[in-house]
Length: 136
Image 1 (cartoon, helix red, strand yellow):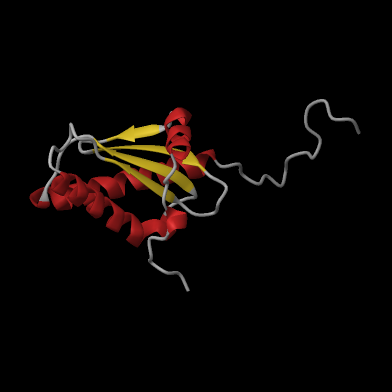
Image 2 (tube, one colour; image 1 turned 90 degrees about the horizontal axis):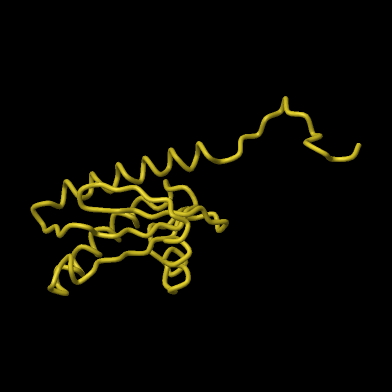
């Protein structure tokens, strides 16, 4: 049975984990959010959140934005491909924008799932086992 907990295994915590996702340079943008992503080999998705002081001066607002995004990820983490995601909030949002932000995050995750599943290697049964300059 799958749990809906947001465990420590589902979090990006260390600076080098964030840096590797940013350096991978795959990203997708929308009005409120920018999502940087990188495939991982762990078998599950991990989330990192970035909400800068330029986006929202008050820590109360920054924590609200993190809470909304973390909760959405927690509920949908099993439907996301095994990726490291860093979600960067570009524009401040509050409770009246909640529905549009959640819909935006959902559409971004769907686009990322499509992109990463299309780039995944396909099993081609008709392909020859010999490739390139391999000896017989």
